[in-house]
Image (tube, rainbow, N blue to C red):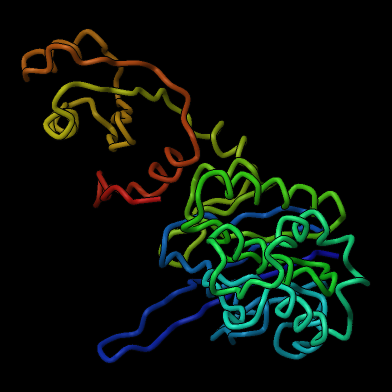
Length: 315
């Protein structure tokens, strides 16, 4: 049995002037015990998919199942077997850490003690602050409390909607370590994130943009399908360099990536490129061949003939 199945899911939101399609004919499945990632920027449709799967939102079209249960007909059964951590901190901020956890345990007719082994690694970090109100916790501690509350009823599937957004790098690493331990206990995990560097931590990923899935595969396979040489280019005037590289006749794609620009060419001629940059005033330009990453693959998938250089996106 598949842990999650979606078939041709469509979700739209009407506005005063038009109708926004948040999820556009999306289909995919997740195996039991898998750590599956929905990767994409804000507005890609990740949250709408999670809310449909956790029975909080109705799709306009299509069918979705969680462990064989239909999200419409069997919504009560699904709510008993899933844990959901929304993107925005939604616990009771005027209750203490301990009171929040006890409250969620009571809702599911269980106790902290009964399932303590499941949250022990996480809750031990919270115990020194168990009498502190949730609203007074740091971002990383709020994240750990929310995860503990989502786990306290021992769910079979865990949905985590952008759980590391706005959290410091150390807390992000700790969080993914916790997910690895939960996966080892047999829990199926679906996580959404705008951070491309987190994609490689998943078993499989779906790259999303504008409500559509561009590709689904393991992170390694997606990178291997990049299919061309990638170059990192740097010079003193990076803004001018970007425009000049895009104007180079053999340029296929060129995007700003941190302190460098990532470049692919239709025809590789390093001597011609170096001479071109020298003429354009880039005397100390450094050109290096590099291995592509998930973000490079994402930008390549976004590229279309009508938009050869899509705007850089903040991930």
